[in-house]
Length: 472
Image (cartoon, rainbow, N blue to C red; front, side, top):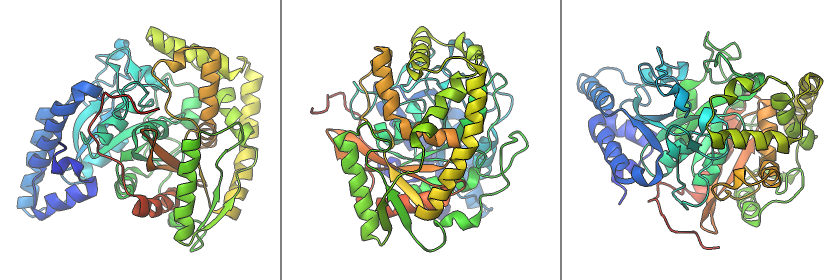
């Protein structure tokens, strides 16, 4: 049975701690007990911080008793994907070679979360170097989906999504370069926000290929939109370690183009087919927005296929783009990366890479015009259901189908655009979700639409993990 404190949102927990209805120690201990109860079956948490977390909780409780100022997440536990620097602990990226790579300082967002009162509770699993759509690391092994252990929990933030979905954490922090926040959220039935490139600062990897610099972002995973909003407000803003970071998110993006609530809807973005369960979820969300007074039309951004193709052209077109990482990968991760590169069909040619960068600017401009007209875009996260474990290693043809299902994800990463993912139901035993995409720095607008949907449909998690197969 899920303990009551593990069912509550981060915002609710912060309020209860500040009011004295509960203590940070009680909250932290409840989540540690929940990890004891369920993590063995899902392998989402890979490094616990019990002593540090309980000590921080005691400090937070003393501050409340003393009447000291408190932050928006005062005393609330938070989990961190193991590619985010936490001082004194290894940033392993799931790789055996980095098992002892201790961070000497906190990632900027960790600094900000701690300043807001959050208590780091544990580290979570990811595939080697975060370079796979399924979470199975050479260092920590596989993470299992709590809805169905035979399908993927997603990657690369699969550990975080499972942790939040099962009540081991109210709030998690992960990253997204090719859906690594959004795909696990779809697989596990939680909410997430992929921010605009530069909205949330991140420390650069010293050997990162250019695609990571241009596409990878950090962001929150939670069970409620309110938690995503609070986490984003805490983490956003310029930081000297990130040259892409911006001073603030413009207030004008709190709603799409002022008071007019407008959204374009696509059930088969770019063509090529969408699973009926995914279509049904999109249609349900569109109906909720229409009933809430939104102007809903069928449309999709221009050159969607071309925007999708930018992803492999930028990441694989540069002959040396991922060479530095390959030696650190486990055999399965190497195979997944090799199959992905072949499936993408992009020859390692510097001309392809440069041409993609030039076309990217033009497509960004065309999409900006689309959003000016339509407000936001409601569509699929991935157009297919979570694949069975091992499917991304099967064959080039299978990987091509998986990547085609990620076409919206790849396009939005290529263009550096924000999007929110929100669960909208359950079908064939698995969560349904939708993705709400907006123009640059429209995070609050995306969250506003997501919250409108959430108010009607509700949340799907936390859940008890199951080892039973879903009904076909």
